[in-house]
Image 1 (tube, rainbow, N blue to C red):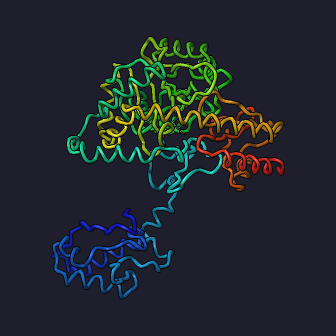
Image 2: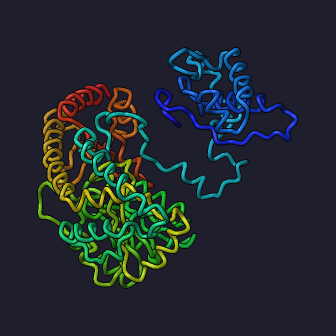
Image 3: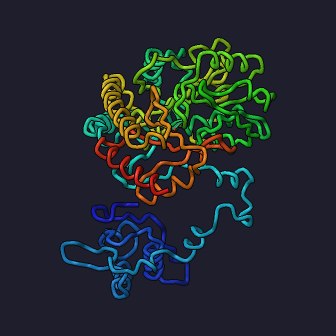
Length: 498
Ligand SMILES: Cc1ncc(COP(=O)(O)O)c(C=O)c1O
């Protein structure tokens, strides 16, 4: 949708002189329909009658007649110096055409839509809500980096430079694996920062973690295959597994991470697991070495695949640095996923998956048939961002800020909510879990907090089975310290009232 204030709409449809309806009437109906459907919002500027006539290859008298009708009926307004725009006075209730109303009101799970069964199951999976146009999150929106600290000017400069000088060279279809220098830069970076062992050929650029999880699940899971799921765990993995038709086996997570023994008892035939070993989502636990070795041993014996989601481990504050699980893999059973959602911005939709060499071809064949390759311009700019050293600098700077924000949140929670909330202090990451007394219902607490403007999703929300106790998830990376203090104070009031 064009910006209503500064962009004239372009109309690239054909009018049909063979139809019984006169051309001016066809044009009138098109524009009126677009206004009522909200596609041309109030204030959207229209091209001049002359420009539109040229664009559509019709006479100017036709466009003048159509505009006159629309002006007369109040759909458009016209002022000297401002041109013609969609009226700002149209009642909002009119602004959705009946057909669109019907579409948006129909629940996705309606049986008469005859959707695939696995699509209907998606309705039960929690999802991060898009915050359209929101400048930043309410406390304690999880999964959000510091939007206030991103180097926007620098990024704009890199994008502009590439758009000006390189886009023409890269205008045709590009590699399905992504821009080669970006893959080289990533391979070099994760070798040092995460101990990941790979060549650039094993790196495939994806649309964030979600694109990588989707690709892995499509390539490695047949409908009905059993897959372990960290419970509680990441809803994005749950979604990808559900879409692939996997039979989900929830496996509990304890203080050492995924309980491999419990997985073997519950679902001995599983051939796939998605894990967050560096910083478990949502509890924050780091998987112990013992469990890592047990998991790798299981994968090797059962010829199973481990998908390692290493979404925010670049932000390690204390404790011993833990290399990625992939670094310990001798049998080629681990697929490693990284994302720029946490390290830069979620809306960039850039991430990557590092696959064992034997999976490169099937992955690329699959990718070719999904989205071909990610948009090139951001990949070009990101390669520069990493190669010119900005990325490492940004991470270093963010680590300092996030550590301060984590410490502030820990301090406030321990000071104000001691006895009510058992806080798990994570060594890494961008969020932490606070556990409630067993008699408290975390969904009820979360609902009351939400009503007071505090977003703390219940941990049980991320679980397929009842948990021994409920908890709340607190994001801290994207929340300035003053808001953290205010947020904890409000939450304390909510908990005391319950
Ligand atoms: C466990 C986990 N993995 C990955 C991501 C990032 O997903 P994406 O890269 O698709 O934005 C998140 C974001 O909240 C997450 O919590």
